[in-house]
Amino acid sequence: LYEIKAWAASLNAKKMQATFIVLAYNFAQLLNREIEVQLPEDEPHNNGNEKKKSKRMKTLEQKLEARGDVLPKLRVIYQETSQLSVIFYRWLRKHLHDPAPWATAQSHLTTLYANF
Image 1 (spheres, rainbow, N blue to C red):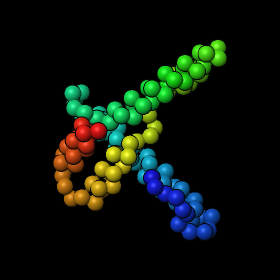
Image 2: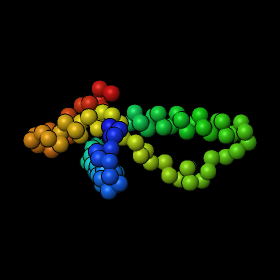
Image 3: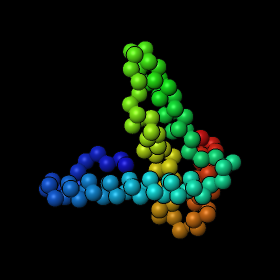
Image 4: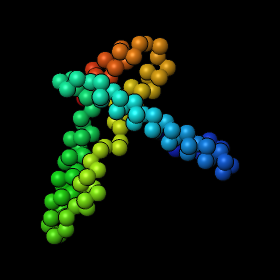
């Protein structure tokens, strides 16, 4: 979330900053899930991360297979992407302060993903 430095030096301030960062991250995750649920199947959505993740998983499976190991079951079961794209964060940052209707903001995000 582009946070590099602490806001203040005290331990309490650093804990507060960490809490706010986690809250902002969870808000972004929930909003992204809500948007994905509302999108029709034929509309473009953020599948760039999914493609990259799928490629990394195949590479990892090949490396493990070459060593004679298998992928841990937990890694196989839990396949959800936890990292949102930069496109989504830029869109979110822009539209949090934009008085445009929600439908307009969503169509803008869909356009961004289509051009991605």
